[in-house]
Image (cartoon, rainbow, N blue to C red; front, side):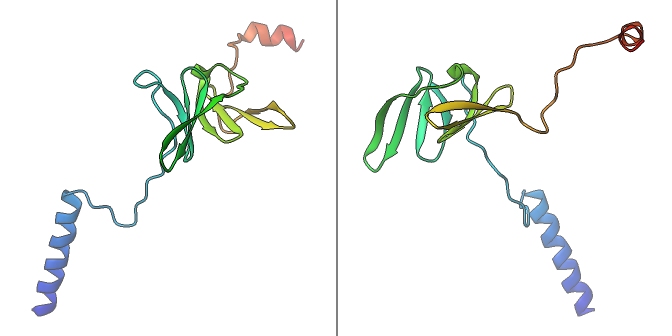
Length: 128
């Protein structure tokens, strides 16, 4: 009888925890994406922020430090994520800065590939 009562109390505790939103062993990953329409910040990483005017701001112990204009390969409106010398655009294209210039790394491997619609007749004539 005692074991049944302990089991019942355990099930009750788990049910209550589930009702109030506790997740056991559940972690959420957050990225540094900022909604461009609600703030002047385009992208942010742990030590710097890029504003809508293309200026980089570094975080210091005393506050924000203006690091000047940052040379970008795309307009600031197209930047989704930025991390030091890496950029991901809103179209999921990666850029990397090395050897003094930006290099297009290409689309994210799992991103959708844009295609043009084709008809059966078009395919037949192309491979005839």
